[in-house]
Length: 528
Image 1 (cartoon, one colour):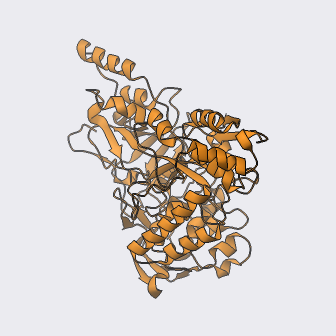
Image 2 (cartoon, rainbow, N blue to C red; image 1 turned 60 degrees about the horizontal axis):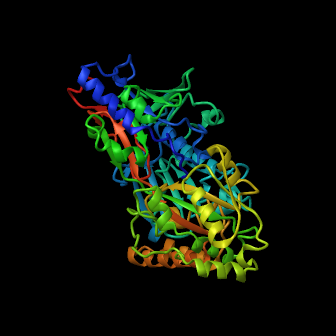
Image 3 (spheres, rainbow, N blue to C red; image 1 turned 90 degrees about the vertical axis):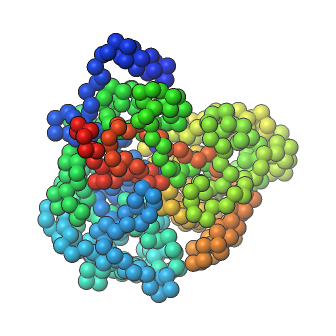
């Protein structure tokens, strides 16, 4: 799923000085947020762009929606698949079918039973050909799913159906990762009698742990669902703080207005040495990737030579090293993804070869090359990349930053940018969540419209393979094609950091960047 930075870095020196002054003068610290009235916990969060799981494609929306709507499975902090609305499942037909058994007596927050057909209807909403969801390709391995979402087949052709208290899924290939896909917030169950209300408005009936209310100040109040399948969550009321008034997450945490807030890596670099904040710093596993991409269907980037020239002209190692404590990405798969190898799959920095490629494409020394705009919502390195492309290739690249929602709308629209950036967090911990979902022909998340039959064949072989070693080999072959065709250039990997109040238990997001609030609680004796 796409990601957006929650807050900008704060000023470390000022924060440290204030902490020292408070300690020396014996001044009282700010009131702890979790002790204010009936709110047990305050968490920094961006408001969802939509309240409809089927329409969500960004991490901010997913983080809120997963507290409100539940799926048949869930991922724990270690990325393992756990039962949720379904208490068990079976794999059959040599890996081509899945059958989920719903828990007995499970209901929505209003007491209405949750049935297998409700799950089927919720999943098919993601594929609705009139309005397919941005992550509709999560289900592309299901029989008939691609044909239905593209308007070529009827709904009845999709291999998802109810059988008593079971949800049965038939797949066109073994797809060992599809079980993990079912934990995605996009496949959460929406009450059929309330489906029309989800979207811009928060739901009044939910399948998840909390009922949401948007407060006058824009914050979101989450109230425990007493009918939640796992029992009422320990924290009865949680408030999502969505507006800091221009302040950073670090400042708001220091002032006691939130108990948990994600922070950036630059803040983390100094907080670890802070005597007050340091013990409250948490590092979370992050299966995230930032990359640059091209519209491969429009000139000049419909020519692989031009894409390769751009990829090879930039010294990505140097640019990332100057702006980040992390090494540059060498693969479209972040560390932590099963089956990832250590091969460097980038085209390689070679200015002379880049100039030769551009000349061979008809633009010697950049002459005659059209002005190109690099569009972004602020992933990083944009100005440095534009400067280096002009210096090495003699091409002019204008950088344009857009609001995140506007940017994603444009990227998914009929006239996408020619040259763009994106951050992607795994929807599930598997290579297909990057190499298939982002780059297979026809995928709803293929922003650059890359279409290569050899690449698709490699992905097909990998997806149909059940042996992990063979699967990794095919995914490696696919990445070699990316190296030669350069539809995308991996830049860096994500690193998750947060400030978490001491005594807060369970505050460990999974590698996909999402945290289940139903598992949070305060430690005994923490005064909460």
